Picture 1 (cartoon, rainbow, N blue to C red):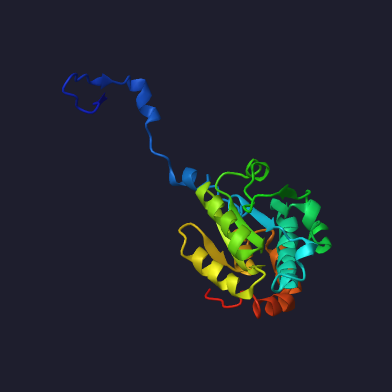
Picture 2: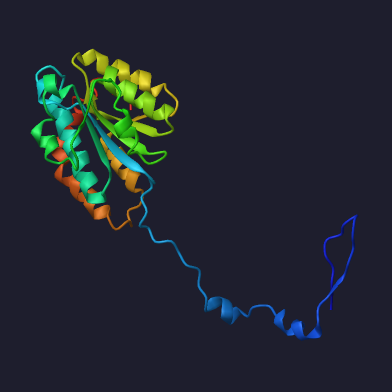
Length: 239
């Protein structure tokens, strides 16, 4: 049998296969194909390959000065409960805790590790950056919208990550700052402003995922609280 290689201007050499090899060149039968089904991928992977949650400076000292502080706590607790179910990494910071105190107990009780204390406004300090997987998709909650949240989102984006600013989980001392900060962040390429529930569903991505029931449990258990929070945060939503 004569098999010709692709034509070359430099060489042309026909290749002769021994007749003993001809029997090996038989097409696969239909029965053989049907007996070897394709392996289908199981829906065990999250839609987000490297999800993470950032909790920014949720310290008791700010409780009486931040607009709807308790609403941010509610949203943060919901996200942390979700993170526990899906083993999502959580990174928390405090701002000069020696002066401004510790993380509020409701949040601190759900943290997998102690907060990173900082003086920088952005959460992306070296100790946090070193723990992040490449191109992480990060839900960002905490305070203040126009300072630490904004600078953290910008730094994450510039470092190759995908920040999702959670509109029902961020605020400032002055109510008016929140909407202005979110408007600014919406205009920034690579930064998404969304809600906690939207991020949770997008993170999972598939109702057939084995952990979908965990998501539904969190959503149902927190449904009334979520409705209350969304009535006040963000103050002037454009989502």
